[in-house]
Image 1 (tube, rainbow, N blue to C red):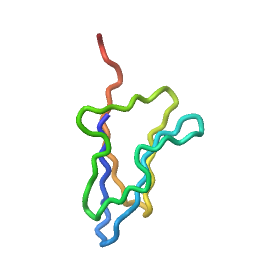
Image 2: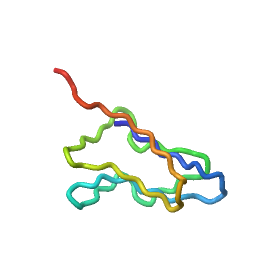
Image 3: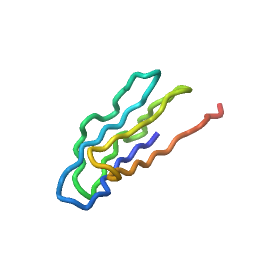
Image 4: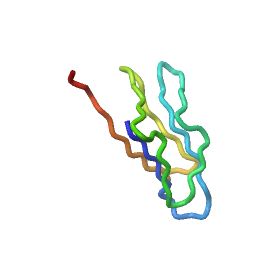
Length: 81
């Protein structure tokens, strides 16, 4: 999974972002209170690293300002052996 978080608000303030996996009511943070400068992006999972999501897991993201966050992710649904 590749995960890119981008601040799309053209302001001079930095936004705080949370990205986490919700599983059975429990939150497992990938990033918590990460500061993303205006008009920039951060790559949270890099270099071939991966996160395996189980059935029922939900990938979620929050931002400190409404409509200020874009998330781009890629995934593999199944792998043939």
